[in-house]
Image (tube, rainbow, N blue to C red; front, side, top):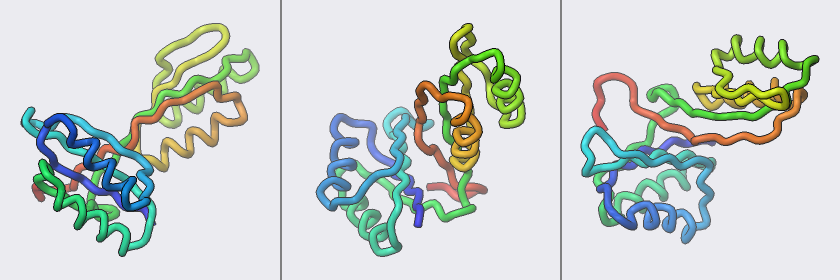
Amino acid sequence: MRFVISVYVENKFGVLARVSGLFMRRGFNIDTLTVGETENPKYSRITITLDGDVYICEQVINQLKKLHNVKKVKLLENGSAVERELMILKVINKPENRSEIMAAAEIFRAKIINYTTESMCVEVTGEPSKIKAFIEVMKPLGIVEMCRTGVVALERGSTIL
């Protein structure tokens, strides 16, 4: 099962190392991890996605709550959060594939952010499933390289972390 955990932490040196170290010590794998300053520069939000069972998720959440500088931990239930990811993908630009790349970019609401005679860089944002689908469409056209940010997520509605 896939879980998304939001961790509200003090924006201080070493906090990310303690959070990621917890996963390493417990032998849990982090699928994606994103960190950024919040509306208050004293705090950062760490968004972690991981695969596992409910027991592993509960263990991680309980251990995170015990860490120094961690203020709040919230499991973002499936469907109760808005999730987005950013990816930049470089694909081979051959004359016979050019129109297909551009059509796919339009369908997926992606942006071509760099164009040369050899390659195109495409920026895609959206839910992780959209990113995966775009990758599958681009694979036969010749992906050169790609970079993904990982998931950022906020709970829907008026609930505050």
